[in-house]
Length: 506
Image (tube, rainbow, N blue to C red; front, side, top):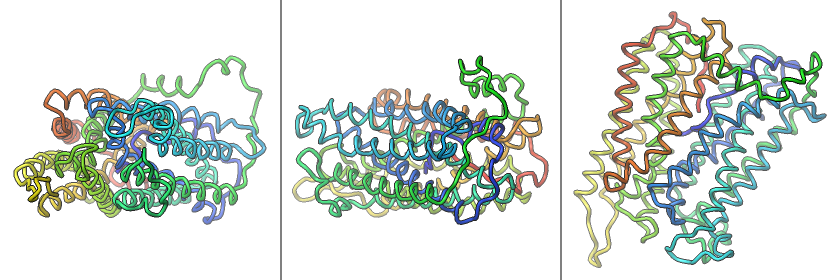
């Protein structure tokens, strides 16, 4: 699920100003580069499944936890275009993309260390043990978290651009490279959610459990250590396989252009002449992401609090719910993979695109509304043991919650494919490049994410805390998105989606 939720693909300059400087690479080299996505997505999956509960464990209230996630959309909006632009013009003897990929992987390692050892560093520098708020650990965590998102975006943009370079300008090979990148993203998702759902993973690395870092924290620390090993392994193998030529500028650079970052001027100036169909695609996408982001942000927290009835830092019930939520996200990823094949089949002309996207939004609304039903069922079926301790929810309640995760994999497959294909079609019809269209669509993704990050916590607090108020807003937004898709979205030419591969944002 998230596949990563804070960037939508390469910037316009990564495509329009990056003509391939080398011939087609063997498929094994493309596979090696695409495999980096597994390491990146493994870390994103851990973020989505484990970090919101971890923030609260450090003493950050649920009301403010969402603010930590602002770094995702902000870095997706700023870092990927900048990294893409400068990797286009890098004159290092090691090549254009490889220095950025290596630097991104190294920064991820630093960030993961800070996040995983935040509690230990905090206590060592004066934080109290126990349930009391840990301001120093929180500060270390936030710094590490922001570095992690910046590094992941710095890594992914040049990695996608390198795949474009290695394809040698051949459309079929480019499609294969994107398909392989998406495949390894799915692999990373499944591995990340599987790791997050296993509660005793920390026993593999016994040193991860300390007086400052109990079972849940130690499990998260172990997961991130595994994530960094996977990312470094895939990155080193890819860089060993790939050879690049340094950038050779066609003409001397204009000194005036050094005073600005052209990518942003190009991106925002293009909004002025945007065709109406593209505006509609962006509008539908914006409401779609207002619907998705609350669930992506608080899904495991919902399992721990509303479904399992646990409290952060009290007993083990909340932690069990979080790990059950990670299992649900793994199920979601498996459904997403199969549903993506179904979307490709339907988009070949058997069902109208308006029906696919509009229907998917109504499915999303149903799924989010069902969280209310499951929550009420869980609250009405609470059981306590002889000692008065609250027990885990009944099997039927847990199955119902996991079924929602799986069910939402269907509309998520549409969210990760149809909008990007439509943006490419409508922007190409107006004379814009596909990279530019994805850059514009990214605005319709990250701005709603920033909106939800700022408002979801205080909104939930108005109704007594919990996650259901934000989920209800998401359901309403999904309905609005579906209505707009059915009524305003123009239909592309028949068969136009056949050879377009979708993309995904975090």
